Amino acid sequence: MRLRSVLLTIASIAVGVLLIVYLISICKIDPRATIRQVGSANRSAFFRLVLLLALLIFLSAQKWRLMDRVLRRPGDAALSRSASFAVTSAGVALGQVLPMQVSMIVARVLGTHFHGRALTRGTVGTLFDQGSDFLIVCFLIPASALTWMFARGPSTWTGLAIAMALLALLTVERTVGLVRRLAGRVGARNATQPNRWRRSLRELAQSPLLEPQLVRRLLILSMFRFVVLVLMAGATSRAIGSSVQLWHLAAAMPFVVLSSALAITPGGIGLNELTYATSLSMFGTPLPIGVQWALANRVLVAAAAFVVAICTAAMVLLWRSQRVFFRRNDAGDAVLHAAKLEARRG
Image (cartoon, rainbow, N blue to C red; front, top):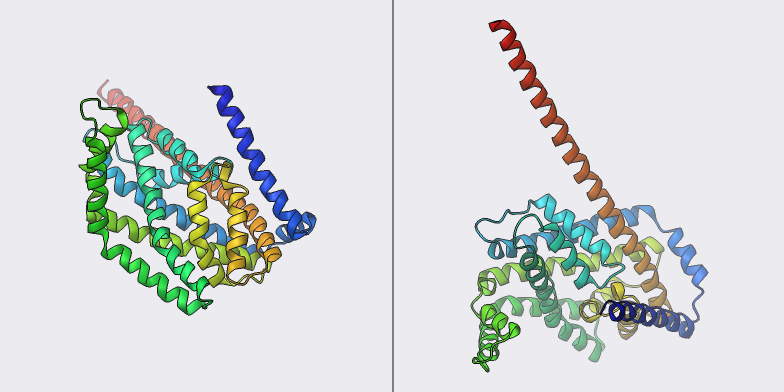
C-alpha cells in the first residue's frame, strides 16, 4: 500500500511537470527570462501579496472556527484565533507541495491532536471549508462563461458575478434542503446492510453543519476569499510588470479554483497553470503572456505562503517561550516570597 502511494505521488508529480514543459514548449517561453522576471519582482507588490495571502488564510481560519463550534464536543478544547491561523497557514504552505485538500486536512488534524476529536474536526471542517468555496465558484462559472460566449467586458462580468453571488445567498435554504434530502435518500438505501458511507450520509442529513444560517455565513466568507484571490492575482501581475488585466484574472479565477479542487497533482502543479493560461486566453490575454504570468504566479504565491507560515510559526514560538519565561519568574518569585516569610517567622 505504501509503495502504491509512493508510485501514485511520483506519477502525479511527473504529470504536473510534463504539463508545465508542454506549456513552455508550445508558447516558446524562455524559462530563464521568467526566472529573471520573478527575481526582479517589485518588492512592495510582493509585500502586498504576502498581506493578502495572510488575509486569505485568516478568512479560512474563521470559517474553520465557525464549523469547529459545531463539531467539537463539550469536553473538547477550542482553538484560539492565533492557533487556528497558525495551523491553517501551515496547511497552505504544505499545499504548495501536496494537494491542497490533503495538506489542509493533515495540518488541521495534527493541530487539534491534543484538543479532542481531531480527525473529525480536521477532516469534516476542512471539507466544509473548501466545499463552500467550491459552491461559490460553481455559481460564478456561469458569469464567466456568459461573458466569454457573448464577448462582453468587465462591467458585464462584474454585474453577472454579483447577481450570481446574491442568488447563492438567496437560495441557501433550498440548497441545504436539497443536500439533506439527497443525503437522507442515499443513506437510507440498503438500510439492512449499512456501511460507513451510508451512515455518514445519514448523519450529514441531520447534521447542524447544514443549518442555513451557518452555511450562509460560510458562503459570505467564501465570497470575500474569492475577492482576495483576485487581488492576489493582481498583486502578482504588478510585481512582475505583466500586462494581464485584473478583470481577466477575475473572470478566469472560477475555473482555476474548480481545477484546484479537483487537482491530483501536488499543489495543483501543471493543472493550475494550464487552467490559468487557457482561461485568460478566452478573455483576450495572449497565451504566451498568460503562461508566463501563471508560472511567475506559482513561484511568488509559493514564496508568500512559506513567508506567512514561517513568520507565524516564529511568532507562536516566541509567544509561548515568553509565557514559559514569565511563569517561571512568577514561580520563582512565589518561592522567594515564601522563603522570606519563613525566615521572618524563624
